[in-house]
Image 1 (spheres, rainbow, N blue to C red):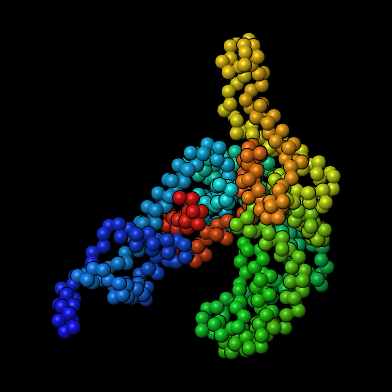
Image 2: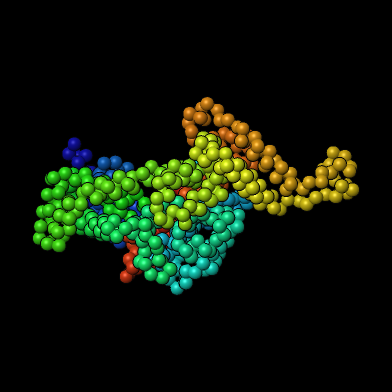
Length: 543
């Protein structure tokens, strides 16, 4: 034992630091790049002493427990510099986007929904997201994030920005569909037939502008249906909401005090339409002990103490708001799903809440957002709820839906066969004809259109199997029915990939609020773009 101990001690004295290979360094760089992108962390986070100590402790522990090379000690300088990580992010994004471009070019019939994020224009950025179907799984890829600092955001410029960005990837602008928010310049950039407006944003606007309208001046003049007493109450309530958000943000800055709360508090977000309800519901769940924690924290701040007391007295107002607005909750949750199709639910949601929406002043101006042709098509492509069109809307709505679906489906097939060969003259020799003089007078395109109409007629009377009806999984249904409907299944894949909401970047990819401020940019535009795009490609899991 003594001799063994002496040999081990001598061996330890002769150890040198292990030198990582290039492959091992690249693996470390990629892991840290993913940490920054996927977890919304800053580059400087990888340089903090606590982070280095943590990783070094893990390394030391690994070497002590299962060291296979006793002549080496733990490696030194395992954490690369922030520039190295940034360069790794850039190279990884460049490679992934190159692979994505090749993926699109390999699929000449590639169709997608194009989502324009201009809510981030307050940071002078514009994001373009693609939603598409891959092997009957919904995919979202952030195509680009553009710096719009020196660009005038007119409708013409927005259209040009999006068209040129898509052209780089070989995506034809007119063959796809656009979903945008309600910004006037964004809406004005595209044709109504090939674009639609975010439905959750529409609902939010109807409610917000009816109860808390713009100032009564200029183009924003609005006839409010509320009398002065009610309007005053509504305005006061909106002020109360702002105060609630202020209190929540303040207490969250003190981790020690915030951790004492038994009921976690959440703040609202402009692009998460249910967040106000969630914020108020969490506030109403505070017990006496939680309220005492808040009172103690703000005890030395007279202004905040007064606000806190006002919020405690306003419990009834919050409960009334939840009662009135809660009707939209199940529909917004349905329309904001990130893992399932959502456009197929818009028309049915409209039928169910239109009576409620009719009581809002701005509803008449927004109704067309819910009754776009693409919403009829999407609902019809959902075999499990297409029957609701008749139940909720009647025979007239059924007739309209069938006409719209046939028109748009045939247009889709026509674009798919735009390069088909022209007719062969009947008197000319046709090597593909059964016999001379019997060549068809219809072009391949006409034959495809006839096949499309025949498929559609079959689909109207098609019934799902018992297993499919029990599962009620629309994507699984179409993956199984594709053999029966080769053309219609392609159209269904295109339509069902279109989301009802336009807040893709804000909901899935956004780190803008954590890395960029209005007064100072902590990251360059190209770096913000790389981080967002790396996270997007990792989430999509295409390669």
